[in-house]
Every structure is written in structure tokens, then in C-alpha cells.
Image (cartoon, rainbow, N blue to C red; front, side, top):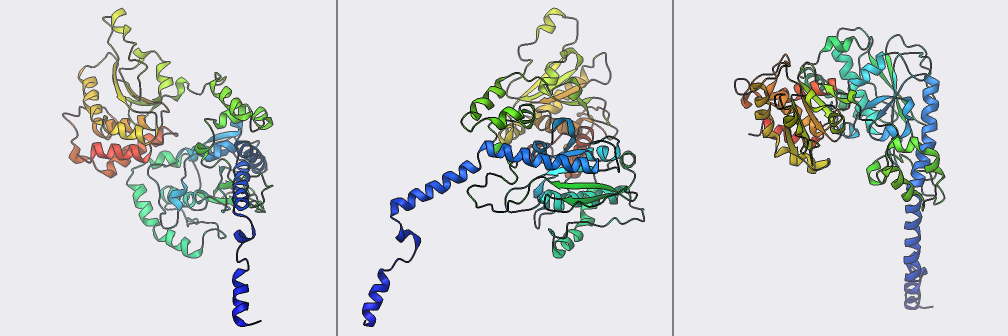
Length: 487
């Protein structure tokens, strides 16, 4: 065979998979693989994977006899409500490569309360807690547990036990965090500590919560369980990754989803962790076709355990005047119990409830300020920005027309009681409250020139110390800074 004939024959040979299969067959194969992938990540498979991982979480809680703390929002899905001791808000973004930081917005001081108090899963062997989180495919541990929590532990230790002779260094998991990254985080620790000190936290009160330094410990489904014994030198913070790395993630027959609860807003169809645990059996036994109808019926049904109680109204200390609450809590309490109510929501439950003035004309009316904001998200925060300038003059009107009760009680409410209401209250704290927490006249008191990012963070620390679940979004804080500093 001549060289030319050989080259022509070689050129006609198939060179890739697509030339071995008819184009239509190749397209059908691609669609079939995509369909398998979608079915493997179905809602029913996610719920089954969460249920499987929750068994591991309960096993660890039983082994160490320590309370379970959910790192929100993911962690709550893995913990039965009766075993959940509280929530934390450690974000993976604060531990991403090159972006390490100590968050003054998410102080997580409520974790200290849980660590230092009695109670847990059975009899206690040592004081500490188990922090539950998960991560999606490709990682064995979320950055929140491997880096954000260690940074927080070290800053808390340096704040509270600065003169302690014990080891107060940075501890990170050696199999996750490289020596180079560990050293880079360490180089920033003095800056993190300075930022925390500028918040002017009540350190004496915090020292009453825990008696020794915090030490992170890491557990995944693939690690051996460390023997903690009875710790005398530190409080163990067990960073528990609930989900395991699948042995063969590309196997179409593998229905297990690693980190199934992560980013639940993209798949949960309105379902909440409380729904899952309350109706776990019926959800897990339903088919994929039945599930949408079942979920909708659960969402439409009245809840048997309403979560909005009067106790969810929180006083922001050291003030005696400023409260934050979810709207449901405020609307179920007699309106006359407040001198003023600030509503951050699309509509106000009090818009058509002004009969108080008609039936009791001599009784002082509750002042109401409605800041119309869409329901949650960035749109709500951006709408809030346009209305925050109305808060100081409204507070001023309350001061100028005092009621029989002194000091007046002013409640800020939004749908959740954690985001928009916290932002509006933060404006009032910065402009209408002095360093001791006393309500002052803005006209005779503070000027915008005295407000900076440090003073805003200090007042935000009042909110997060008083209300554990307060978590104003980045957009909400941008709105506050625009109102206070951007003028």
C-alpha cells in the first residue's frame, strides 16, 4: 500500500466517540445522562440523604454527651428540633482562601452561653458543644468549620484569656489547611484582635459564661473519633461535618447526595427543617410524583407548634427602650403596650387598627411608623435604604411627647425579626441612644459627623449580644451605612 493510500484510509477512520454514534443517538445519550443526574438530585433523594446524615450526627452527640448547635442555615436540617441547643452563623466566605476574617457582624456570642451551661444529649462529660454543618460534593469539610471557627475561637480566647499561660494559638485541621495557609491566617490575627477590641464588648460578662479557652476539634464521617475525656484545660468545640464523601459520586445508581441540605433555597420548594422533622416519615415514604402535592399541603396547613411567641420580643441592652421582634409577635401583643412601633414590611398589620383612638380618646395612641419594604432579600434591604432617614425624626417625636411610662418602649419589627428590623433599630441606636443606652434627643445630641464604621459596629454588637438570631444581611448594613455615614 502506498503512503498516499495509507493516509487516506487513516483519515477515514473514526477519531472520537461522536463519529462512532449517530448524531441523534449521541444527543439522546446526553439527554439521558442529564436526566439521571437530575433524578439523583431530586428532592426525595435530598431528604433521604439528610435523614441518613442525621443518624451520624445523633451518634456523635450521644458519644460525646454534648449539645448540638446548628451552623445556619444548613445545619438545622440535620438536627431533630428536640436536640437542637441553638444556632450559630459561621460563614464559609469568612474562611475562603485569601479572604480570612473575623466577622463583627456575626459575633456568635450565643455559642458561649451554650458551651458554658449545663445540659446536652444525656449526662455531660465536659463543657463544650458540637457545631453541625455540611458541604457539597468535592470537599470533606466546609471552610466555615476548618477556618472561620478556628479564627473565632482564637479571637475569643485572646479577648477573654489574654493573660492566661495556656496555649492560645491558632488550631486548624492539618489535613485540610496547609502550613502555608495556616501561617497566612496567623499573620492576620493581630488585626482580627484589634477589630474585636474596637467593638468594646462587655468582656467581664463574657468571662462569666466560660471558664477556660475554646479549642476546635474536627470530625467527619471518615475520621476516627478522638478521645476527649474530661477536659480541664479547654472547652472543646467539635466541628462536625454531617455528610460523607461518596465513594463513587459519578455512579448513576448512587442516590446519596453529599451536603444535601446546602443551599436549600434552590430546591426546598418552601419546605423548612421544622416541616421535615415534623412530617419526616410521610415525606420519606412519598414518591417523587407525590412529593410536590404533599409539600404544598404541609405549607397550607396550620402549624401545630407556632414559633412566634411573645418571648421572641427582645430588649436590646444596655438600652431600656429599644426592642426587636418578628411582626407576628408584635401583632399578637396589645398595641397599647408600646409607645411606638416601627414596621419594616410590605404592609403593616396596624394600618386599619386605629380604633384605639376612637374607643379611648383620652388614652395615648401608639405611634406607628411603616417603612414599606418588599419581603426579604436584596430588594427589601434596598427599599429600606430609602426610608431609614425617617427613623430619627420618628424617635424624636416619641421623645417630645412622653407617655406615662419612662423610658418609652419602642419596638422594631420585620417578618423575621432578624434582618430589616435590626437595620432600622441600628440607626436608632447610633443616633438616638447615648453610650449608656439612654434615649436622647437627636436634635440636641448626636450629629452625623460623630458616626463612623467603628461606632456602627459597636452598636451592632449590642444587637447581636442581646438577640442571638439577629443577622442583618450585608445589603441591610450597606443601607444603614449609607444613611449614617454616606450623607
